[in-house]
Image 1: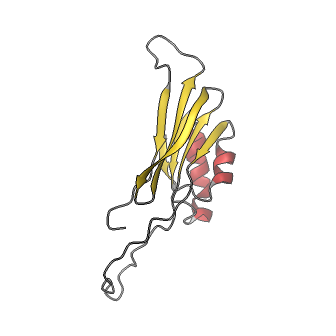
Image 2: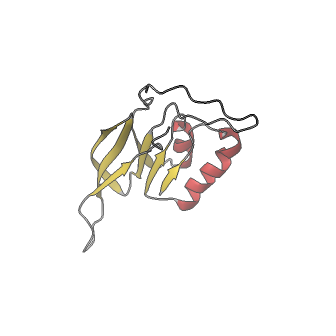
Image 3: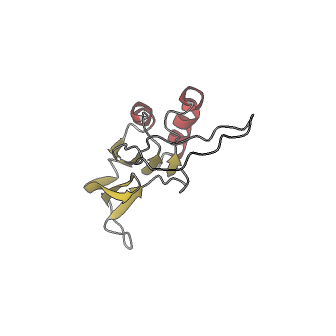
Length: 140
């Protein structure tokens, strides 16, 4: 399951639906983008999972010409200040063989985990490489 959780944005309004979604789908592997500040919520919703977290890093400062002010009444353009990616996996289903981060430039980091299923059947892969990454639009 892959989910962009919007970090703490309007969390008080969204908490119940986020927890319900995670519990309902009960996925063995969950990748969450924009998970800053959601450690407690993820632990509550997925108590049988191990969490691997990439460091939250603000995007690097860029020199840009001054932008024109938006027209009166226009919605302000929101800017993400920090994001992170999290990989969670069900401990009873997988063993963790390795984990890490891969910097991809522009402050983006791929969180990854190499997992080995505890039970492998014919045709099953011996290991899985799982990654979670949050990308921004080039203008952000």
